[in-house]
Image: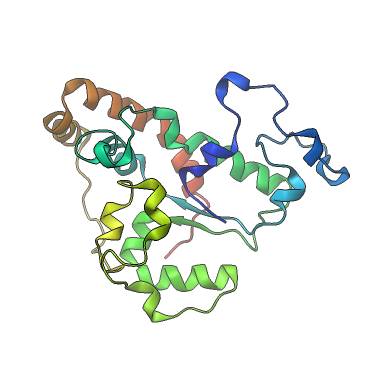
Length: 221
């Protein structure tokens, strides 16, 4: 299982914190190891998966998520509102730490990939991923036909348009200089207005610590 922001949907909603969320009929004797399970999935079921993780700097992911809630993309996604918590950084960190605590994720099988590293080293990144999950790497994994074979994305129209209409993973030059916060806020303000820019800036600040924590476990190229 390759986890990105979807960890948010493995957790009970904030309003249900402290309430038992796992259906009693799903619980087995193997689910009680003394470590509180923060998810809605029984531990015995979580052990069936090999987990890998994709992270992205919030300075890039939060504006991208916000863009999906504004026209014209919102006409495709059907999402006309922005919920900061759906970025999923805190939930991803919590799930990651729980999987480590239970021994599902170990130093030997751990795989955390940063999106910038993927774009700057696509072939090596995919080779390492294949090695981690035990599948054979093929060069054709790095390219595809625009708009074809994307039926799996139909449920989430609008969220993957850039990937769908690309033709592969091509090596990007390493970033040598980041934009300043002022430059980014100015760009967000120009695109979506001052209130939106402030919301994006605040969400980036709130998620940065969790991203940096996970980044400390990433594959190094």
